[in-house]
Length: 94
View 1 (cartoon, rainbow, N blue to C red):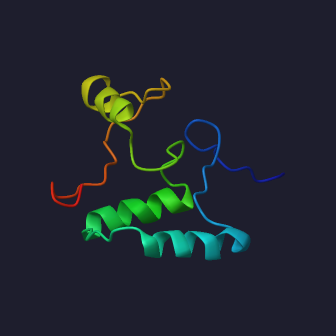
View 2: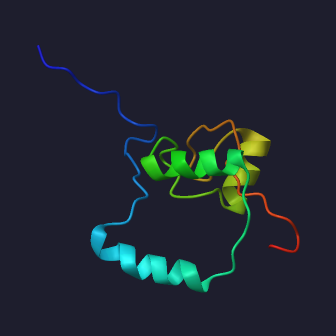
């Protein structure tokens, strides 16, 4: 008997992690961008996005996904989703 894993929501595990080759380039890019302060909830969501726990999301929700979830409990691609995953910032930081 073989063990099998349950497929991720949407059928594909989305890992949002940089390869070693990408790391230096992304670190340089990050250092050139404005810094924002995020709370523990946003940090937890960021970690969940990175490890694929929020598959099929590739990042924080777009406006279309957000509105679809709030109004119809579906992502813009039609998959059911019940909780908005957003990055909240102040108006000054946006």
